Length: 310
Image 1 (tube, rainbow, N blue to C red):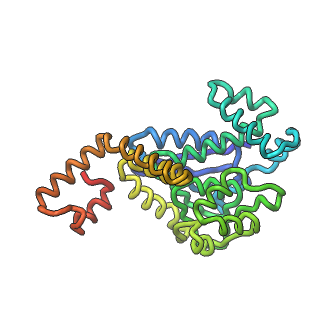
Image 2: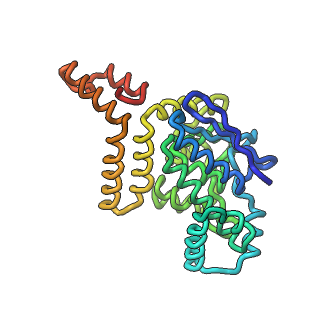
Image 3: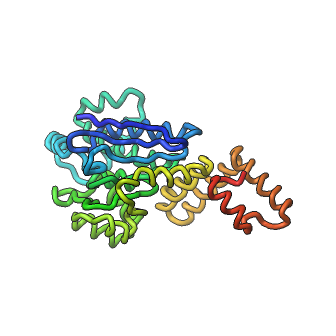
């Protein structure tokens, strides 16, 4: 079973619809397509944002294909977390070698390679210099929830559906970033409750705890996601990428290291043509107005809409 990603351009936004009939399961093919989409969004100056949604009429993306997880489990020897950690690190290094993916796919390390690619895809989304918004059009569970967590914002359709991290019922923890991103987003207590309980949250419950950012009428979900994505995607790409890396990477480091990472991103971004143009325009406007443009509500409204001071 192979998933399909259909991409539509709407101005500066790419709307990517994930389809994997009949159950909308995540699989390795979808991860490969998402990796390519993240590279395109990062490198294309005309792309400011990506909206992810699902083609299934009742769900965004379900969990990862359990039959694939089972096959990998049955073909792998039992291992301790320490051994698995070392193996994943070795496979990650191997995947950086050109042409290694096919060899790993045919090897006993195939399952480890899938896990490592999943990790790389979510990190690619988090570090991408475009804004990513998940438009959750229905049920979201397991790997689908983890994919949504890698995005910068989550908008969820109102209705009789839910979001959950239910892996505990199958005897294992979330493996695609759920425990780590939920902890960073919601805090330790809420992350533990969600992962240990495994039960579903309604759109309102998810909004109340901060798991999703908005609950939207189903008929307007993608339209609203594109509105938000287009607005945020008009900010300079270098600044978007720098902010995402500083928050997503630096926010997980000790404070002294996070501050240094932030400063490094700042120093790199101020030398870009967009930043220099914007700073020159701000300095000129300050002189012309005889006051700081940031204190003028009219100027602030224009900048918010335009996405940049230039």
